[in-house]
Length: 393
Image 1 (cartoon, rainbow, N blue to C red):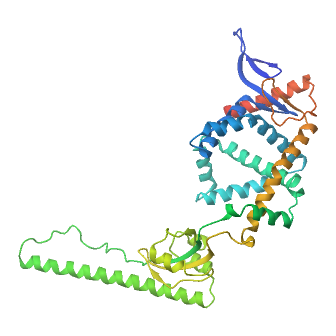
Image 2: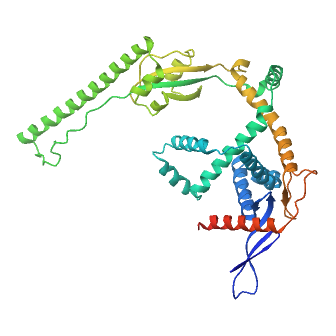
Image 3: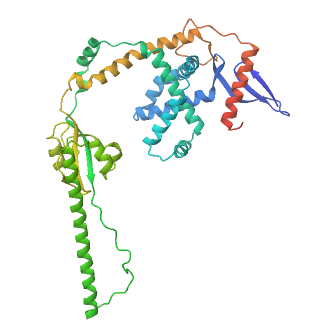
């Protein structure tokens, strides 16, 4: 088998066949790297999926607005990855941390379980990791090369806050944490003879058998009451520890039986009308940092802490300053990033195939000259990508 390379096309010429069979197509070259038609098509498929999520009622509108930038975004990524190499950014350490963070968020026991979860989505684990790594590298390059040069003044922050007050208006809400102490009920007596036949009818034997059953019911009720009593005593003891200065989050992690124990008891944010009326009346009357009395619920005895209490209306500037800064940062980042990527295009060789448009192209780009060396590099890159796709060495 011999490989014949055309400028933008890889063909395989098999012995005994008169015509070439196309297996892959190059749609763009970025220095000595390539973007293939299958990668381009895959990105368009991903965009279509994103459009369905962003605007389920009219996904075609989102897709048509952004489809023209698909090749641009692939070129952007390749330029940022190459810049990452120049800057010595590998992303290796960050990748390990990111994968472990993802594993914990998905509540998986091991990295092997994460690998299975990734492959279940129809993507190889190696591709999954490479995609994550590419995200890390590109974000670090953007942060170092663009984000670090942006500045935001206090006047800009205040002006943004005043202009967007209506968007920041919010209903009253509280952020809650809990310590739940559930009653520990004794396990059923395994030695009980469940299958033993019981006397029937109005006989002395039947009357005699009813007495142990009644006694068992009474014992079960007593055990249940004792379990609830013990839970209440434990909850009251924890409340005393809190009043004496104990740390709520630490006590929740150590003693709470609730599903939020590992997170220090954090339950999240609640608006009015979500909680049970009794709990809503109690918690919405509390200030941030206050702890409730012990309250009995269906699950057990609970102690609630209001970690934040946000009144209805526009929050004060100090409470949303971080949000304002982030909004301004990304507002400034987009044009600065496009300017940076335009400059990278002018400093590198970007060559789309005729018929494929780079919407981020600069009129000052240098058109690369095709040589035998570039053809050879293309062939190697295509061969490597094809092997990776087929899963062969």
